[in-house]
Image (cartoon, rainbow, N blue to C red; front, side, top):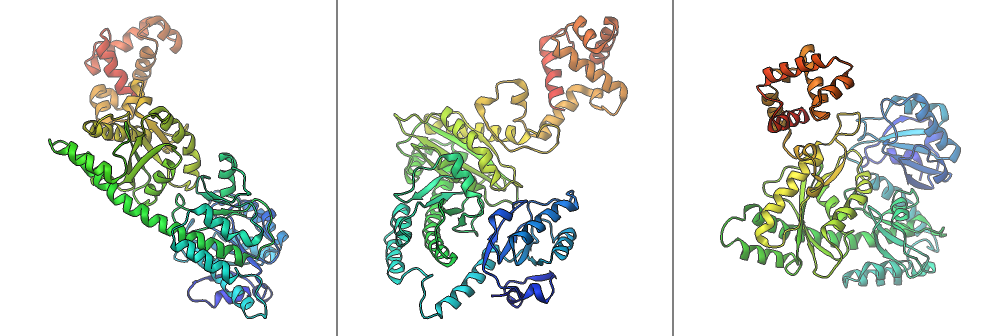
Length: 518
């Protein structure tokens, strides 16, 4: 197959941005998808390179695009297929770099998945192979038949993977989740440490089992040792695993429906019949004998539909815990909620749940870096009657997590906050909706809330330092390099403008809270 053959396929909708006849007639030997800034060491001669251009930003200089394309040329890549989704098009500096290095560049429209391009290339190559007298590069017919039977029987993923690679000599092989959780491994594959597994997921040599799934729900086929296996064979194995994955996702969808029923009851639980109904809903979710219960709520963006997958994947890391993940009827777009059950006699207490999830959060966040994930965790609910309170706690902690900002920026930083983390006045206030905090600050500070006035800014600074030094006139004066009489005068002005008496503890707390709410 040649580069120009891809342009003739209307189903892909590719557009040639640059490429002359010598570039377009190059033969394609394989496909690699990468978003590494320097992918050269992972490429082989004759490969087509797919890139979503996540590695590039509009603020980057021309040299970054130059280094990327130079690596393609040095590795012998035949063409670059650049996705339009990340930047709404392909940067002109990248096109010019390809022109200088003699690499054809084609744009991939938003509606065309990289999986479609990969399948097109390999199916064309496999078709050529199947017309040869011998077809050593496909899974043997007896293997395909056995795998089909195992799929129909609903076998476990360990057995399916082991049988799928058995004819290769049963090399070490893994199926990994998006966060590096081991779904399956062959008998020859030792346990994979969590950090190493998470790194393996992002390696360009790892094959995505279901690229169309959300970033949090994907499975990956990982063979740590080189195997002399044509791509066709590995893709066939990946497709078998994808069928198993799709069956698992169908079961998850059914379970989410039952979880939504449970969450609806929790959100509305106020009648005398609620405990009995909650008991039946817990039983339907497989949580009837698991207590105490912890509630967690997670939110991405309003347009993000992967939050359910993100929360489900995170909770799979909790051993000895059952859970039910769904959406609240009153939840916001992009929000997912779960009830986590802890079986009596296990070590998975609330502290362990929070610690495990907080340690995992950066890895989970990295799977879709553009979507900041925020989460809130409740304290344990020991009875169904406490569920509504636990849900309220989780949503309050979620608001607190969403209010935090990355140091030195106004951008929210991905966060997971447990209600038990809110141990200071400042932390507690972050759980209050932003509009409420702003209104409180304006009304408590009165005229001082207008910090565009230089005099008011000066008084606010003095008030902040005065409260930080526990109302000490001398230490405040020292910190601000002022005379004590000046501090007295300014605090009197603050009291007059706000109507507060800073000799009173409650009024000090009011103004401290108002400053924190600004």
